[in-house]
Structure formats: C-alpha cells, structure tokens
Image (cartoon, rainbow, N blue to C red; front, side, top):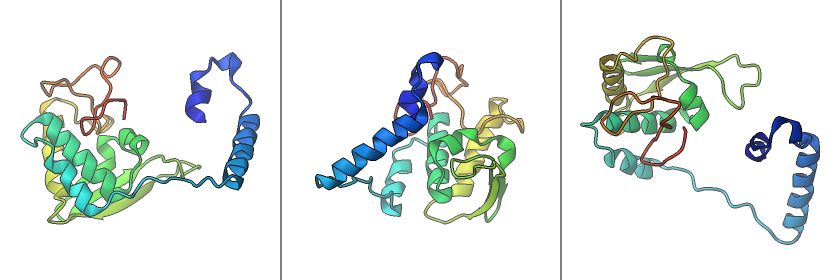
Length: 175
C-alpha cells in the first residue's frame, strides 16, 4: 500500500484510512472464499551459507555483498535498516559486532537499539566486516557519518548514489 500511495502525486494521494479499510474488506472476502496467505519461506542457515559462497570476496563488490548478507541474517535486518546503518553504528570486536540500529519499522519512537552479534566460524561475520570496512577506508568512505551500504561501480569504486542504485547479491534495485 505504501509504495502505491507514495507513487501518487502528493495532491492526488488517497486518504490512507480509506485504503486500509478497502484492503481489510478485501482480505475478509478473500479469506472467506478460501484464500490463504502465502508467506515466504524463512532463510535458514544452510541456504544463507550458499549466498556468500556465490560472492567473489576478492572484489570490493563481493566483500560488500558477503558482509551485508551475513549482517542482515545475523541481526534480522530489513533492507531499510541495513541502508540506514552508518559507519559509527558498527563496532568490530574480536568475538563479534556491536551494531546500533538507529531506526526501524518496529521502533516507532526511533530510540534505536544496540545488539551484540557473536561471530561464528561458519558465517565469518567479523572477517567479512573487517574486509568491507577496509574497502570503505581505501575508498575514503569510512567517516563516522558515512553509510555502511555503498553503491559501487562494476569496477568496485564508489558510484554516484543518485545515478547508481545499490545492488546487493546481484539483484537490482535500491537497497
């Protein structure tokens, strides 16, 4: 609903309460007709481990993708929470990462939450974080207020964010 609502010109957007009401009625009719909610299967560890294996971690893009995939899995981040992370929100420690999620969909008061994510031998989160942060330092994008998730060109250099959407895991679109 929000995507459709936001695509409309500001002066032509429907009143959200009406839209929610129509969706609620549609859900009731759909459920009464025997409809079931299809939910995406959860990403389990065996499937997650196959994703970073597909990343060429010898390249800047592969280092970024492998780190973002494992961080998203380990801390249960949504795409928006990942893209909102700043360098100052991630502290790399030998046993794991200390990550502060400043804003999230479920944090209505925007208080933020700091979580310690213990590393595991099979995920290698600390190694991947060190590799990606080394790339950020090399690119001059490691300032505290800089975003952790960065758009890169095909050669692994910083891309103009306005012209190049972030691509994570080889899937197009903004993250």
